[in-house]
Image (cartoon, rainbow, N blue to C red; front, side):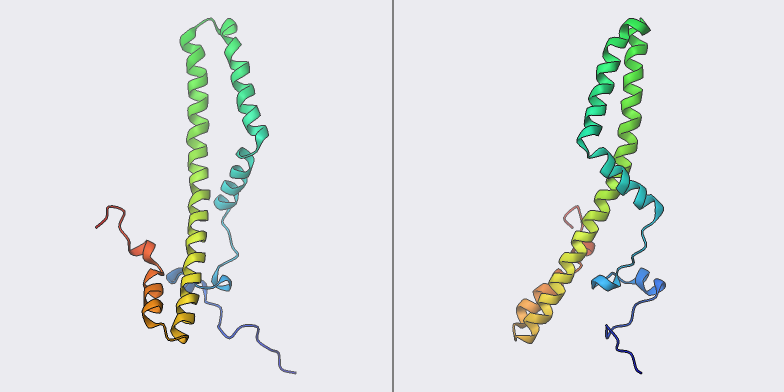
Length: 147
């Protein structure tokens, strides 16, 4: 008994997928690396209200510790070092999460533009179709310095 294919397009190999951007949802690999998973979990962790409460509690505990430490320089060094390390690590993790989110949004917009271009071409709106096709991938061809 012959089986029906759910898609007329064949799935790209890993090498093909690396060379070409995903155009449709089934072109996107389901594999997410360990660092991306970790960055996503960290983003969820630090975006909760109780994490903010923990940070406030840390400052509330640190502030009266001046009576235990007796040295203002050491007292300030402790909080400065602690907050700098936390900030440095969180910026790196959150930037990874934000970059992946931005890329996913842009890929979705490109897929919508490509589909609209096909639809416009079928309806005889050649100029509109050409403009939509030109918009697909524009973010990769555009320079940040305006040149």
